[in-house]
Length: 317
Image (cartoon, rainbow, N blue to C red; front, side, top):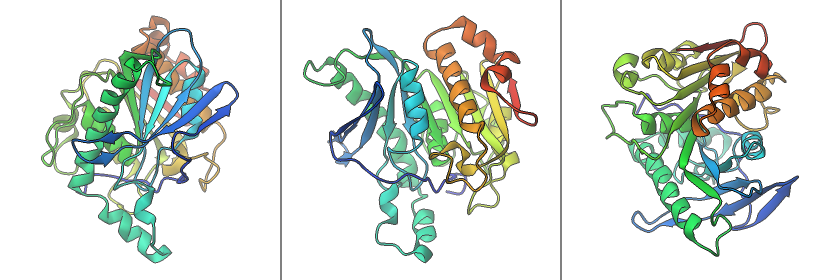
């Protein structure tokens, strides 16, 4: 499945089931819902800030070899700004594929996990989690009871998680059936992947939902050399006009969007703040209906707000 890109995501540890942690006024909780129809556990990590009213939901899909502990800077930032962030772990393409493998075997294990079964299971995981959120929202004894605004849901994903996001937002593929979930309103693929078996216009030309693509000028692929920084920008180019945006960070490599950023060989301090601020502005515009946020996105005001530097590109259509 060559057009499915992946990342060697950087955060792999798991916290005990149901354990909650506090960071300032943000609580994180790990839950392990079981999809009985598929006999598949779908672990999630919830970032939650107390609020007197229901909050919009942002789902996050990790890259290949990652986990629900991916990109904690985003979970913390989104929760701090009034969203409930739900980071989903996808069995079969998560950190478990590295278990019992030596350094020389890990690359092969990652390659083998890029398959149609995992590519199909991931969007199904997302739809199951939304089903589960609906149940938890109505459960008087659950920590999420009454806290979720399920009329306003967004999804983000990095690398293999971007592929998941693209499938759900309506990418046309010769290898998979459509995975669109109409309950999701806005989409944010980080390190997106252009198809290799059809044109970007055919793959993405019918997507009318709001989409923000993020990539970098060094955002290649650790294994698939055909996946270049330039090809990642074809996803944005292939979509029709209307509520579409793209951020291209100068010198950002693949892992700039994941982990803490410190593990990246070329960590640039302003990248994570820019990613956090622009993504939140996007959610404000399309999950909260904030017209001021939308106007900023569709102007160079976004550059100033995000602290973009010379060489960083911000565009919209």
